[in-house]
Length: 217
Image (cartoon, rainbow, N blue to C red; front, side):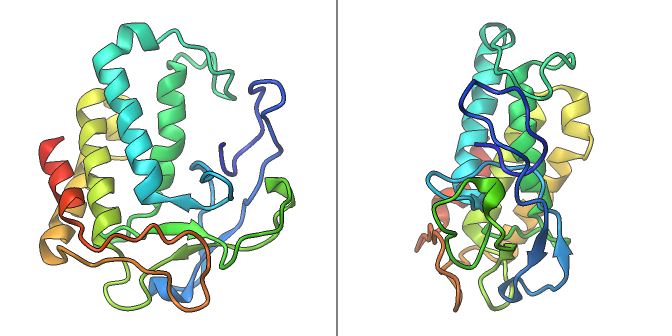
């Protein structure tokens, strides 16, 4: 399910009002202040967004487009962007790609997730009033190697699979390259929920496969 943004026509029974339009940096991120909260996909069963989870989904959709563009370009998804001249599959990819780009720090590293500190009650997303925080590791360098590796791989695939306008604004391959550079300096910074955070951890004790992915993409 889409996170934030504006409601669209969608599939009957599967749309909701705009949600989680305000975000902020959590103390564990190494930064303070507001942060963009637009775009991205809700996780399964909660309203958080996770780079490591949505990265593999975005990568899979990008490979679907690269391998089967002819079959995919006419698939109608009833999105708010439908009819804008771009195939719906690319519109949907861009929705999460833009959120992932917003999760990259200036040094090239990527924060693990954007969630509230705890899961909200069982309510519709637009009724959830908890702050959507960018969550970090809680200590230097604050970003994680697994998230950064997944991010870099997705940007590499986007750089070879999409149109020039999609990969150059912003410069997607360059952003992925910054992630690879960060990984060279921080090869295995793993993630565990910092104190006070109880949303999905999706931790991994070894980020070797995430480091390998961008090299193979």
